[in-house]
Amino acid sequence: MPDRPCDLRVLILGGTTEARRLADALAAEAPHTHVTTSLAGRVANPATPAAGDLRVGGFGGPGALAAWLAAHRIDVLVDATHPFAATISAHAAEAAAASGTDHFALRRPGWPADPRDRRHPARSLADAAALLPALGAERVFLTTGRQGLAAFAGPELDGLHFLVRTVEPPEPPLPRDIRLLLDRGPYTLEGERALLAGHRIDVLVTKDSGGAATEAKLVAARALGLPVVMIERPPPPEGVPEVPDVPAALARLGVSRGAADTCP
Image (tube, rainbow, N blue to C red; front, side, top):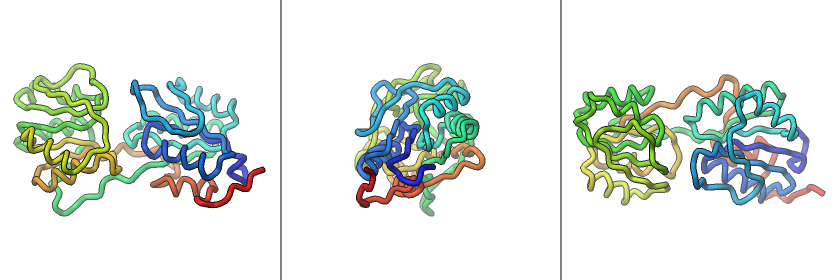
């Protein structure tokens, strides 16, 4: 890695709030750093950083990503993708190793458990679906994203009503009895309590994504005494360093917040 932030060429694999904040923080604290944020292109109108270059679309696998890193002389690859983007993270680790690029992950922590929670861990969407009949679920608030809803479309769940919240419309197969709510966080505690009560929800199903933008649903479920089926995160690639937030990422990149830019 170069000795000074002004010499850095950074690729951020983005799509998260943390990725946007890191790109903007680098522009503010180390304006001579060259930053590119890459988005997978799966969302039609994604939130994008205000600063740096933007690249949209996949790379075509770890080999193509390694070639892109080398061709663009990237010094540091920051994996700031969603905690459940396991394939992208694996490809990033492989590409960084193949190209000799410094690499770390910016991964927000999962949501801490509270003694008042009624959490039921699940290893996958299929495991979560299998738990619902045993919990006596009738009206389910499903906030696992628009992909993988086929896990809840089996005939054994035909008697359940699903309120599904996604940013964009999901593709079938879908649960038989579904009400779709298209919305994007952040959400308020008052709004989430009203949503759960208004739809008479008796079980919340979500992923352990972490972050403040969507945590209010957990606090609301806790206040209402509702069980929460929590899908656990996939294991990260072995040996990849992780930092929990933007300040820690800046520190690893050698950038001090509030310090004067010393680049010529």
